[in-house]
Structures are given as C-alpha cells and as structure tokens.
Image (cartoon, rainbow, N blue to C red; front, side, top):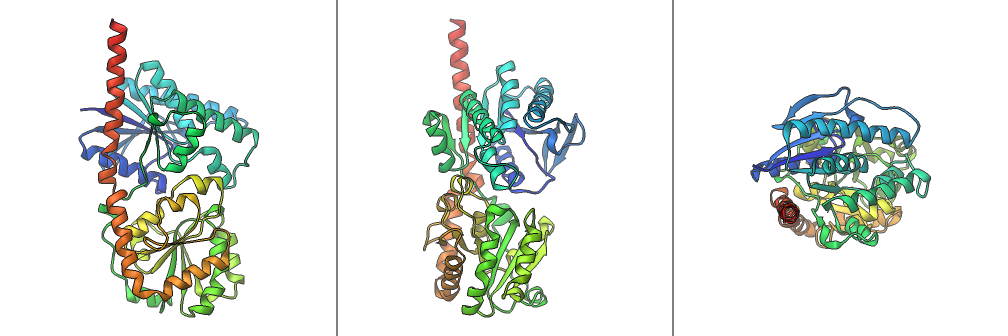
Length: 408
C-alpha cells in the first residue's frame, strides 16, 4: 500500500477551511486505498512527538514555539519542522511526501525529501505573502513579502510535482517559468457526505431571531478582504427595496468589532444580526435559515488568484450565491446560471444584485439545481481526489527511471 505523508500547517481538531480541505483529501485518499498520515508544524502545537487521531486520521505533532525577529524566526521554524518531519520519515518510511502551503511547510519538507530521496509534491492553496497582505499582517512589496515570494518560487522549482487549487495560482506560477506539465490543478471541493444533505429550515428558530422574510447570510471568518463592510453598507439600499430582508452574520475574526460597530451605526441596524462563532455541528442549522449566501470579497491579488471554499459549500446546501466579480469567484460562479456576480468594492452594486435575486423567486430553483450540479460534477472530493494517485504514480515512474539510469 502506497504511503503518503502530508506535511501541514495545522489540522483537525482545529476547524478552518484549511483543515476541512485537508480532511477531505485524506479521507478521499483513504477510500482509494492509500495509507495516509499527517504531520503538523510548530505554530499550533504545544509539544513534540505527539500522535493524535481525529476522525480516523493520524497526525504527528511537531513543536514547540520558536522565537526571534522576523525572518530569523521563520528559518528557525523551518529547521524545527524539518527535524520533526525527519523523525516521522525514519519511523514510517513514506513513499511520497506531500507538503501543503504555506511555504514554510514546503521548505521544511523539501529538506527532508532531498535527504532521503523521497519524491516531493508541493500543494499551494494560496501564496503566503498574499495571504499576509489579505489578513493585515503584511504589506505588498515589503522585504518579507519579497523574500517569501522568492522562497515560494524556489520550493516550486525544486519540488517533483506541484498542485494548485485553481487556475489563477497555476497561471501565476507559469509566469515564474514553472513548466505547465509540472502543475496539476486540484480544484477546491466539497465532501458531499458532510454538506450534501441540507437541513430543513427551522421556522421556530427563524422566528426567535426575528426572521420573517428573505435572509442574506455570511458564514465564515471576518477578514478585511472578505468585504463584509461592503455588505453592511449595502443593507440600507436593499432594505429600501426589500423591507423584510435580514442579514445574518455567523463567525468571527479580526474585523468583528469594527463590523459590529459599523452595523450598529447603520440605518439598517435592525436588519443586521450577528451571532458570533458557533460550533461546527451547528453550522448547517444556520445555513438552513438563509436564502442567499453573500460573498462580497474585495478585489486584490489574493482574491483574484485564489478560489474560496464557501461558495461551493453553499451550492451543495442548495443556497443561492451572490459574489463579487473577482477572479477567484469567476472560477466557481457562472453569472446568471449558478449564481450572480457584482462589481467588487461597490455597495450599490451589491445591493442591486441582491435585490434583483430576491425579486426573481421564479428563477431560484433553476439557480439551486445548476449550483448543485456544478458541485457534483466538478467539485466533489470523492471524484476529484482520484487525480492524486495519478500524480503519485507519475513520480514513482520517474523515480524508477532514475534508478534504472543510475544502475546502468
């Protein structure tokens, strides 16, 4: 049985889009007959040499925290992580090391893969430097940004195969001179076993929250790049056209306090409801209250290059989708077919699209059917994961050829 060691930033039991994609990949690979394990880095771990099992998946933990000034701290983290990965490799002897972004995971895995002659797959979900800009912890063009960009390019060039989650990331790598035949696109997907059977709307729960009309929802993390301030700014114009419309905000994050203050000062304050973070097992209950899921991401390098997971989950839940017209959304949403797109960073355009969608009730079922079909045919993890063994088999063939060449 082929053994695949996944090198990860973090994993279950933490709940995030990152861990849900990881869970889906590992579960799907298990179902295909692969033997999989994960090893997670020091950022989220308290101690070293701990092995945990979550939902039938094994994760080795590498710790502990590192210190030092920027850049020095990251290099220390890479060294610590590499040492932890090496211990797992010595114990378990994987056939392939499959590292997932951020690039610190990739560089640590690269050091171990080269030392032991193990093929390396590097999977990029977002460029770390752009994610830092998006969440407010970095600035574009800074020294750290440029160093991270250079390190990412280095790891991609040295890896034996590269996987990206979307065409935007693949195209960017191509501009760096990475051969296209080295890159496989593995689109974001949905585990339909988890998201494929939506709950019925709980009318008593809706009444408790004061929802007696259409509900616009956002369920996720409150980062600036998500554009939730734009969505709140759109509510007065939407309520003027749809007086019973409500906005449901589920989640939290760095922008929560500012967004709550903005909503409280809005003329539509009574139509905006925050419920904070909720346990993952209750998320479906809130999805069931919503008619439209809104994703008003602001236009940036990050949102143009990277596809989010949430719109796919919404389509799987049979929800209407309204999203800003940025590159990452255009890869997922076909305007007028599987959802509607509106001009990013424009509250008026957001309100107009939401109002038109709410007024077009006779079209809702066609949107729902098309969205669900889109997920089932292009973004079902059970199907998409079948591409991974092809990548691993290609690496095995290259390794065998190299061995034969060396023997000759």
